[in-house]
Image 1 (cartoon, helix red, strand yellow):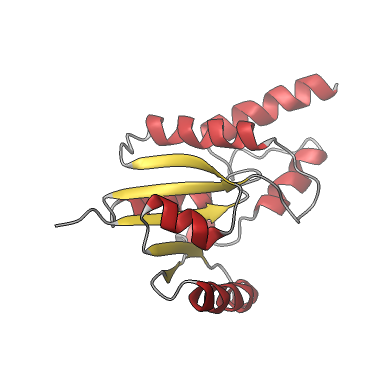
Image 2 (cartoon, helix red, strand yellow; image 1 turned 30 degrees about the horizontal axis):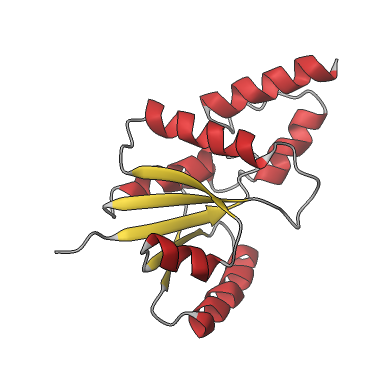
Length: 166
């Protein structure tokens, strides 16, 4: 029997507890889960470098004992990355309907480019469904408490960043 591999792509800037919830749950469904951290973002100015984001996710995955989770830089088309990793599934988080509209378009585009790769939509746990990375960035930019929304590694980096900015 061959190894089942899924890829969970995103910017993770920063990774939220909602992102990590999906990482933990998806890691139980596949032999290997590759968290693909986008090297560049078309979103707001990045809060953390790609290397910082890679490190935080790795740290939290190790702390949680997720031995089948790998964290890698995504610097190519997602479908090419999936092929290189041997993945047949892309995991995408969907919190609200507006997320679904965007994700549906991306899934259809990826299907056109690589019909052998399926997209699996997962919802975060209901207590985390409202948490977004942009909300965390906004709270952090005003010195607010982000601990309810982010993992331990991310919170430590946010604290360090706040100290540097003072």
